[in-house]
Length: 379
Image (cartoon, rainbow, N blue to C red):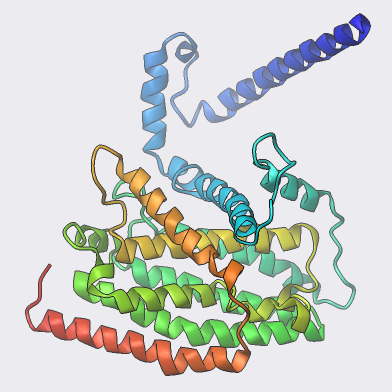
């Protein structure tokens, strides 16, 4: 027993030494590579005030915003947490346990285990596919979803790319998703993916129109396409109180754009064998379903927060970043809940509801908002 314990301690000591040596090598490499670009000096190791000054200067750079917050790292961490939250929430709703063993507390490491599983699988590309256009959609979906994040402000200060036409930019970027789905379906050279791709194209295009119309109502009230201006106009009254029908229409259309239940017809397993994703596996499948889909979920949740819930505005002393993330998470939860309680719609009912109900509701609410503003209504 003593021998086993000594071996255990030896392994721990060796592991610590290896980590220290590797850390020293990595730090030295970063110093010589990044040192000429960023103001890093050896004196920072003994002067904490220099480290703080450097940290604040680094946080004010575009590099930090793109890579850390509110950019890719933040969104990926948010997506990983939402994956775990969705599985636990749906399990509780359906009287199950959900993830439990991957991590000491409530399966907290389940997203990491999922990533490791996908990475360990063989990347199989069927012989019959159009290879180039088959590999391109997973990369494009992640790129497009991440590009939409760049325009979304977490606060007035934390935004990657400020734009006076932010609303138009986001919808211009999101318009690429139907094309990527159709490209994946066509390049698979298989019947089930092609059926799923056609379904996705019909559904995304049909619901994009009422989605845009419902978005224009807050734009009319704010008198601006700038997302920051839209938030500032809600300092007294949130737009969800002025235009509840537009908010509801936006919410339902977001479910359709995200292909979530009850609007998951393009990926219906019993009917079209996972639809346009049928031929994808390993990390190609992980990039689409594990990364791009949940980044897109964050984009729609954040956009709803900005348009209807006052964005980062909230009571003091809590910081605005907290209020934005908190509101966005609440919206994300409401987008997840229908998966646990609703069945899947038929394709004919889905398209009929888009044109016969949501399009008319969004259009009527837009006309009411425009009439009110032209009549002298001011916030």
